[in-house]
Image (cartoon, rainbow, N blue to C red):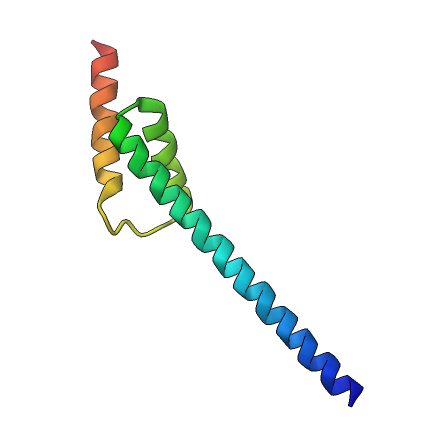
Length: 83
């Protein structure tokens, strides 16, 4: 009887750990997406560059089309700096 309880509790712990990992990944994804949106609104070069790099590094899908917008703004910022 004790072995069955140990196996059951071990399985429950593994499920809880998997759920915690999933929530952590979800929160990280939300943070990356929010940072990119804020960078687009501020139109500052450094936050845009960092946001695009983080987004691509995380290999997230771009549902809102934020990456092309941010990349276009980066090109504009670079053109303004080179003048």
